[in-house]
Length: 232
View 1 (cartoon, rainbow, N blue to C red):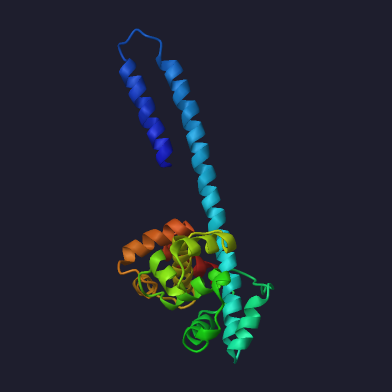
View 2 (cartoon, one colour; view 1 turned 60 degrees about the horizontal axis):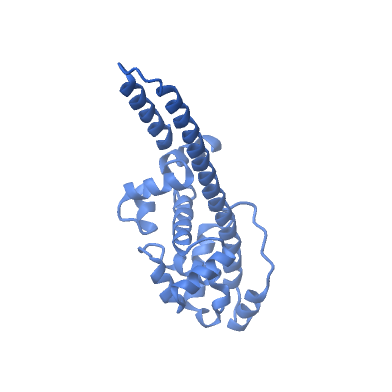
């Protein structure tokens, strides 16, 4: 039962209870009004939840594309080649949102942050630079301000850049990357919840589990169990 539905039932019970012993005939119209308003509110809530779900799914697909670009860039031997690669508008195809192996991605992040830093793109590729930073600092708490400071941009510029390229806010990007990597750790590496939560910057595994369930509509243990059954 949704919170909205629970509120409707409470309101109906209150209306019926208040009419006991009363001579007025206002209860039925009141119940109709409550039902109509409740239906509208529930429909709006469902619409909003579906919008959020579609945005999360689209962001995960775009992150998969960015990961493919980052892994490709890490194989370039000269910063000048990196600049050319970033100017390309071609996006490598991916078969799923988890197409890039975690090991390959970790290596790419390390290479790009430590060796090819001078060749990273300018402010016009906020999406790639921001994604690279979040992956590099994955085991730490990250705020949108941290992201802007690392990119040497104002927070407003980062917000505009991510909205234009990924249709998300800085906070949504940070959460998406952490949940994405947490999923990889749980499914690909078979990590325990405590290990996965620490690896993506959550000190409290229960907090991580709550955020994970809200994001994927299932708990970490449920996702691991589902994968085990599908493999068996």
